[in-house]
Image (cartoon, one colour):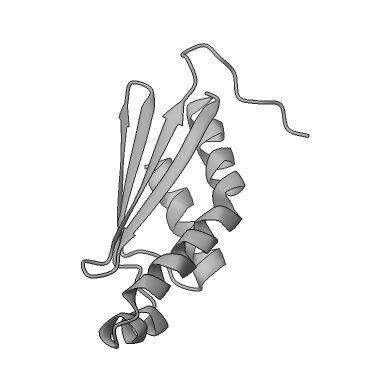
Length: 113
């Protein structure tokens, strides 16, 4: 629940609006967070006018901009190093998922600079 809440707050800070639903699953060395209901009005307008590709480009750019914050959330909450953070958004269904791959159990998070 702490991971879901932290991702919702990150969205609110970075997008101005957060998802209305969030659920996180931890499966061995993987964390999956599903976020629903976070579409912004400008994204809906673009999508409805045939610019869904642009919506994906903006979301990809945002993901890249907050990747380190996502990594920090997961490392703080799991106590494990993050190997990779992936994100995908389906604007037609207003669902985003973040898939995080963790380092080996017992491998501590990377030291902060």
